[in-house]
Image 1: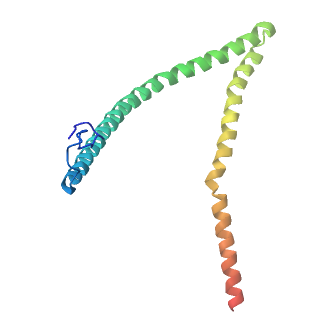
Image 2: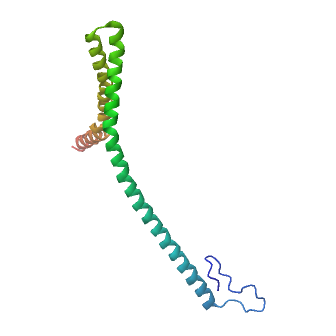
Image 3: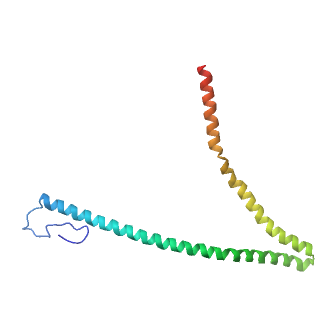
Length: 147
């Protein structure tokens, strides 16, 4: 009997050996099953170790995002000030510069507000309410026809 998984040739290439008996076949199946269980256990251990690694990396990713958020805010403020300054230089108007700064802030806020409204429609469960309404109307019609 070979210790290599998947190799169950019990005759080992010996032409003088008698054909397998029922006991040899059962032993071959038992060996195959033990190899399958061993492979499944190894796969489960591998998946567990990868899950632990992924969870550890997830914590690192969260920490990096927490570090990145203030940097993104500072970069956005810097960009807004740059736009305001580039408008101030040719016009020498403080009002125009402050207005440009505010517009750079308000345009993304408007896009975010529009997106929230758009995605918020899914909270109204329109299809479910229509289905309930149709069901009630059908039940009322059925009740009227049986009266």
